[in-house]
Length: 334
Image 1: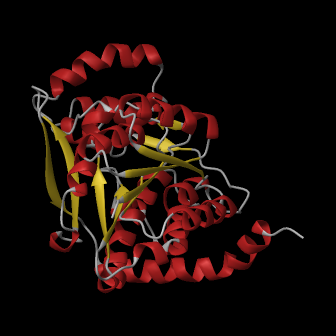
Image 2: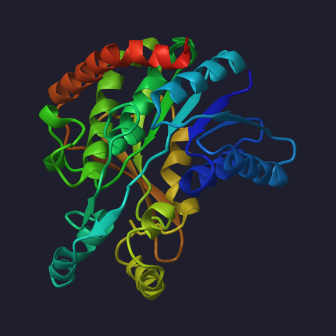
Image 3: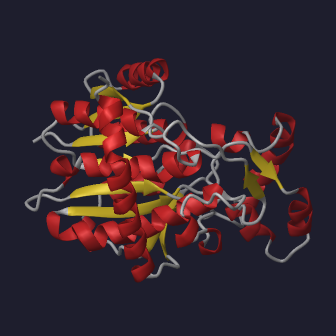
C-alpha cells in the first residue's frame, strides 16, 4: 500500500526541503502539503513535480493558527486518505523577533559563546498577539493548532497493525525556564517561541504515553541553526551578509550550524526510515552538519518530567473541550 506523509508548513524553508528529500528517498510516497497560502502551496507542488514528474503530490489548505481552518483541512484529509503513515508537524512562527543587544554583546565574550549562538538562549524576545480564536498566536500556531489536527486525524493515525509517526519540528531553544503550567500560552513572558517549543517536547512525551498502544508514535527534532524566513527576520539583511561567512567558519567547531534547509531536514528524513517502536520518547533528535558539509543525526536527552507532560496533556484536552463547540459553530455557520 502506498504510504502517505502530510507536512504542515510545506511551502517554504525546512518544510519544502523536507518534501524534496522525502521524494528523493521514496518516489512512491504520496505527499500532502498542508499550507496556509494556496498560491505558495501550488508553487511548491509545481516545483516538486518538476523534479519528480511521476510523484503523487496533493494540497490541503490549512492555517494552524485558525482552529476552524484546521478542522476543515482535517476533514478534507479524511476524505482523501484512509490512513496517514507520517504527520510532520512543521509549521511555526517567531513573530517580530527582537535581539537583546546587551545579552548578544555579553555572549560574544563569554565562554559559552558557541552554545548561546547555536540555541539563541536569552538572546531573543518576541511580541506576541491574540488570534481570532482568542489564543496567543505563537501558542496556537506552533502547538495547539497541531494538537487539534492530531485529534481530528486520530482515525487515520491509530492502527496497531502498522504504526504511524508524528514528527515535530522543535528547537534547541526549548527551555524549561520559559514554560509554566500556570501560563501555558506564555501571556506573561517575552519568549513565547521558546515556551511553545518546550510545550511541544512535553506534548511529545505525553502522546507516546497515551498512544503507543494504539500504534501511534511521536518524536521531536531540532533542525539546528538554519537560514529561513524565520531567522532572516531577526537581523537586518546587511548584518546577515556580514555574519554568514563567520557562521560557515564556526560550523567547523559547532556542527549545530546546519545553515541550509536541506541540511536542517536531516533528522526529519532520518526518522522517516526508523522503526518508531525502537525510539526513545525522551530523546530529541538533532540535525548536525560538519565543517566539510557532512550531515548526521544525534540524540539528546530532554529535560522533561513525565508527570508534568501528562498534566500538560490533560490541560490541552480540557482546553479542547472548552473550544470544541466554538470550532464546530465556525465550521457550520447558520
